[in-house]
Amino acid sequence: IDEASLAMVTIAGSIGGFACAFVTGPVELLKVRQQVNEKKTGLRTVSLVKNMVAADGFSGIYRGLTATLVRDVPSYGSYFWSYEVVRKLYADRISCSVVEVPGFVDFLAGGVGGCLSWTIIYPIDVVKSRLQIKGEGSVREGFFQCAKRIHRTEGWRVFGKGLGLTVARAFPVNATIFYFHGLTVKSLNVLQESD
Image 1 (cartoon, rainbow, N blue to C red):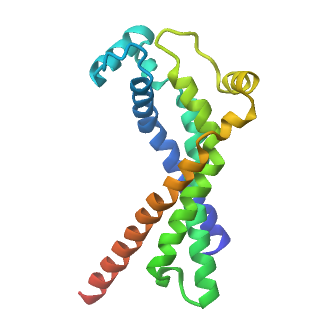
Image 2: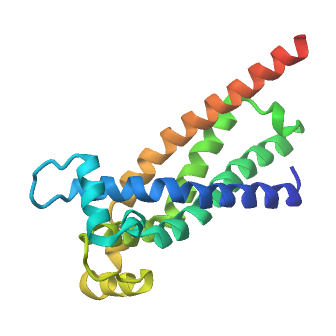
């Protein structure tokens, strides 16, 4: 895989992240709102959506979308880029093609990709979650305004709070995803070649 291919992988991952944000944004908003439900009433998802739309209109379900986009575009771009870089480095080292790397390399590359992408975007995720926690009908706050307020009231350390656990989870989750992705692709290639 050459530099142009790495650029294409990064761009493709970033575009995928852009598209995903329109799905993950509302879902994460609902999750965050349910987690911090102050009334502890156990609002069902449908009731929560109705309340949000009643208070803020349909756009209410997209609260924090800009922050989700700011997070997901670089996250997915760096995720796929780092996965491919690790695979390429190993392939170059043992003089084979990237498609021939063993499964443990896919496992390692996936884990590295997940850890790197979360490390890069974690402070953005903190701001995104804070924006989404704000209740229905509240005054909207911009991304940078929210980040400044968080820094002013809680300091810089809050932007990394929980990162260790997130990265500890990211490695095995993403390693497993890419290991089985690679295994499946290789198995399908063998089946295709045997036809």
